Length: 235
Image (cartoon, rainbow, N blue to C red):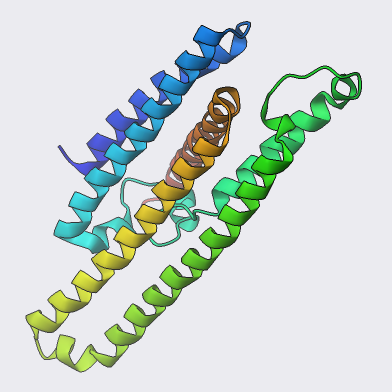
């Protein structure tokens, strides 16, 4: 199975879990529902872990393929950071979703009515999220520096590449594999830690918002690629 086939199958499975989360969120809350939400959230986290395990295997055999990402749309590739999404995007999404939900029922909050959703993050949660965001930014910068160092090493090794030194090329590619692995590890760690900070309902709402953003970007990107392809004139 190619990685593109794996990703299509993986995305279909993610949609099914997200549909279950959405249906559970839509009905009146109970203790059983909270357990079900947490179970489904954990299932999504495991699902993403499987994705990165498969991606790591691809990277070990052909790390440059991860950067080319022929399975992704042009839009998706334009948003990539070290062959994937930027981890701090998670925080921007959560703050945006929290603000939208808070504003949508601010009148209820003023009347003392609580929904327990992402619009009601408590001070302790906000503090932990802020600390994690700062740490994630720091680690992002370190990975960016590592990628920059790799690019400089490639430039210095250009004579060896031209001279047909496969050992030099192999060492450089191994370094790039390590950089991508650290980026993927940070992506996964950030998602897992954010989810752990939230209640089952909040975590489910966050996972749904994250998945819907991913689905939306992919759908729009594929549509744009099709439109662009249809507009080409053969000669």
